[in-house]
Image 1: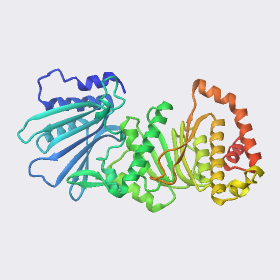
Image 2 (image 1 turned 90 degrees about the horizontal axis):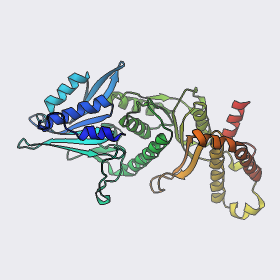
Image 3 (image 1 turned 45 degrees about the vertical axis):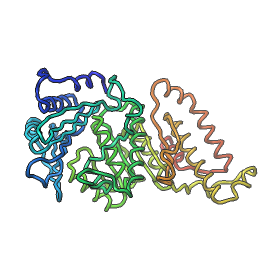
Image 4 (image 1 turned 120 degrees about the vertical axis):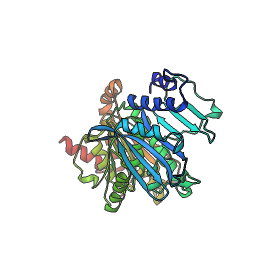
Length: 416
């Protein structure tokens, strides 16, 4: 994000002596006008309305027109109301210091905090966030640990990841590992999106979305970056689809939906990002093939249940003493399967990595295949290497006596 925008955010309006609440509203308007508005959180209820805990404001589109969505968080219920931008801004102005003492504006380049003390003293603070340009970074000992997702988002409470502790959102202790895994995934996604030079709207399909933790996280992060997400979670289990769709409706989220379906029968549609985590055995191959067919610039897969190659493997004599143990044979079959997948993706013009994306203590299914479509000179280099890559695939198959591998078959059928 640009340094000039950060400079504009920390520069007060023309009336430099204006009260802090007027300067805060100026920054809200500026963030909306520049397309950098992430969300606005009003907290610290004042007055007699003790049932209201906080208010979250997000920029959305309704029937193609910009709007502000107000999510009122009460002790026993949530209420969503949508306003035209000017009406919403007027509502925010009327709430500052009267119904809420604190306001926290999140933008792509800065965070703005407004507060009113019990004695009526107003304060305003602007801090740069990572990627916000050339403003000086804090000293190493002052730097907070990076977390791309905001725990205050009410969607995490709806998914059972957070709850309120003394009126503030906090992780449910049993979900701490899941939260770390989700954030790590988003960190990897953010780097891939940057490498692929994606601009909005970003179209995403998450196959096998389950309870939707990662699907909601991807949507939230893309939205916070101003990338106009169009995210679809695809899941076989109807109860999970209904659960996630209910949260989408309750939260008033735009550009996110969940469908019941199987990756093996999905119609091809244009995508920018294809995600398939923990798709069992050859379902991973079908998901990778869908990503290739759809023209996805980013493909993210965490495979599991490697069953296809193990029965085919004819063990080379030199490896038999090692692979006579079932656990070693299983690990070898897993390594060969994912190595072939990575080489096939490279042969299709993708820069591919296979790595452990989170420690085993957080999940046993911790391998990631990440493929980003190469561009420019990198794409030309991969194209020149294609015969070499195909020869490597053939040699690995010959060495282990493999007859077929599903992704290779799918690509061959497509070519023939």
